[in-house]
Each structure stands twice: as structure tokens, then as C-alpha cells.
Image (cartoon, rainbow, N blue to C red; front, side):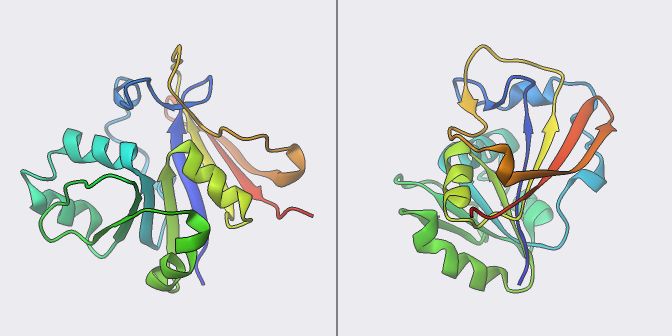
Length: 186
């Protein structure tokens, strides 16, 4: 069975997106358009994301108008989007819109991933649900040299230091890379 990894960029003050659910702050950082390929999770079979993350990607990458672009980026990867809305899906994309809890859908997500990894892309509430049920193996953050006055918090939960063990800290271009092993609750 693969690992479940949360891996995302975050501002210095802990936001994943601004108050309008935009990630433009990230792409305004010099070098952000050409990320270090070593930063991206390997052997991924499933993406898991919330509706706001998904819609930002759909709109800003033009995936509906250019569905072949989706195939270039995500060929062979199933995407689960947790939402209560009916959202557009690029032609030919394996996107599954689900309405419910992570706990409810986790067996299906694991089965779909098989031996490959599951990459949780956001948002913070989704990340919190994985942590709540001890279903996260690592938390990887690429901290950007940017701050926002408000937005989508990385993790709207109290998580003590007894749950996180630092595995890596390094410079990655203009970013700081932090990776934590997630320890089970006792």
C-alpha cells in the first residue's frame, strides 16, 4: 500500500490560498513557475483535493478548454474532489466528485491508488480530516517568501508536536522545504 502525503505550498503565515481562493501569490514568487522536480511526490496514483483547489486549477490552467493539457499533467492519476457542488470535469479526465467525509471515501481512494501514493493537495479542512482519522503519513510544506493578510488556513486544527516529527528541512530555490512524518495518536 502506498503512502498518503499532504504536499503543498504555504505562505510564511500559514495560508494555502488568499481570501478569494487564489494561488496567484505563489506564482508571483520568482522561480515558482519552474518548481524543483524533487519537490513533487513520486509514484502518485491518486490526487485528493477540495473544490476550491480543484476549481482554481481548472480555471487557471484552462483545462476545460484544453482537456489534452489535463492528460499531459495528470495521465494515469485519478482525482477525487470533495465537494457538494456540481463541478466541470475536463473531457477524458478521471475526476470523481464525492460528497462526504474522508473517512467514508478512504477505502475507495486506497483501492484506486493500489500500491501508488495518494497526494492530498488541499485544502486545510481536508488535511484536517486525514489527520483526524490517523490516515496521513507525511506533511510536506514548501514555505514561500510571501505573507497574506487572510485566506485559507493550512490547518484549522490543533495539532501538537507529539504528532509531527521533522524529517527534512532545506532550501529549495526561494522556498524553505519542511517535511514532517505524521505520528499516530496514542
